Amino acid sequence: MPAAVTPAPPASRRELNKAATRQNITDAALGLLRTNGPGNFTAEDIAEAAGISRRTFFNYFGSTDAALAAITHSFLDNAIQQLRLRPTGEPILESAQAALMALADPAAVAPLAELFSLTSDSALMSQSELAAWDYCRGQITTVVRERTSGTAGDLYAHALAGSVIACGKAALEVWFRHWGPDLSAESLAALRGQLINAMGLLGSGFTAPQPSSSRSS
Image 1: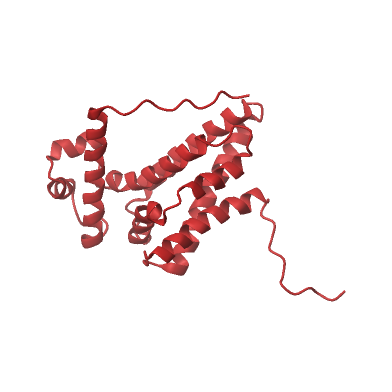
Image 2: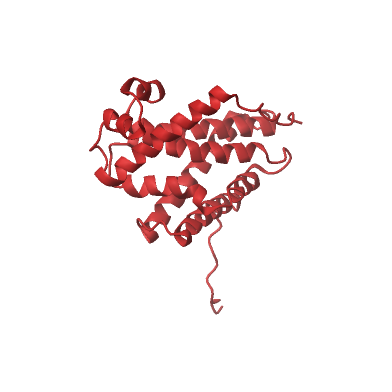
């Protein structure tokens, strides 16, 4: 049986300061995205809005897109952290659902939702966003290997992780099609529900919903 997950040691003051600076930069980048739109601001603009130097910005991020993609990274990292806290004997897809349910506050998904809504028509962020999702896919692959002690094989681990990521993206797309730029509490709760339901569909083998009325034989 895989070893239990050991809690991480408390962060040092230096680590907390770095995390705060990183968050300040992503908040500034998101604020500029709201007002200026994708591709219409620079690293210097973000640095000025965050109250830091251009050099400090590049100590944390290699581009404006990377600063914005960190929003996706943050949400996915939180979900992965919750996934790792699930019991080792629990089916991985049940764990994925529970991990998303653990992010109980709809506001937890708000930055991800806003980023998606503001960049849905832009190809400028595609590479950075792809990198964020691919990083998460790699993390899920690792969790699957840990849960199965490697006995399920690489194909199983990679295929399952890729399917989880595809379902997450599908949930975002369907949510945005219905809600658009609406970031109300109701909309965010709907997005969280779509993410959870997408994992449920994967767990059921994508069994099609039955018609409400039965056919006569």
